[in-house]
Image 1: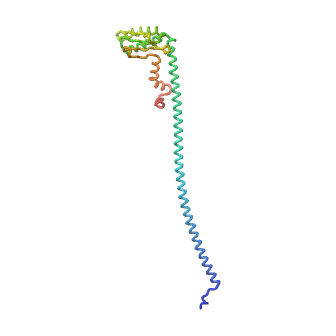
Image 2: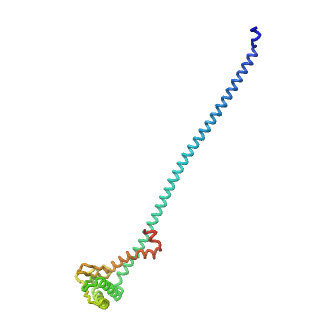
Image 3: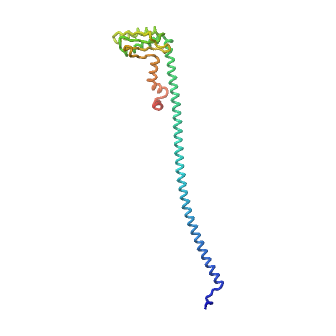
Length: 231
């Protein structure tokens, strides 16, 4: 009975082959499943890493871009300031030369045209008389202008009397004179020595420099120069 159910060697070998094939098939399928799972996880991790690296690169690029933009802005601003300073310096130098040339010209007025100088002196004295409107006035001038100033004083006194209707006595202070290197003009003193009007050429030119500078700049450099370069 037992012998009828016994398997032959060939049958045993066949069963073993079937079992081996089944196990191998399951192993292959499991290996494929593992491979697919590994590939999927790799793809997910790779995508994650790519996104992270891309974000890092974007942040770095944005930072570099901002740094470059800031550097460019600083460079542009520095160059603009340097240009502005050069322009201002050149313009100021031109203006200084202009007024220095004017100083040189006014210094030679007395020597070149005595009659014209005396007329100017009269105007300067008369201006002081009108401003002070006092009975007694002292005048200071250069020693070398003594004669011209005295003539100018006489003419100014007459004109003041004619215009204002009252006498004025103007005295040339010969004890205290203006320096000879002074370009010319007079200093008018009133208020018992307490009020002084400086009508020397240097002082008038200095005031002109201050008052006329905006107009001179506009004439030389254009209408908008004060707003663009001197604000």
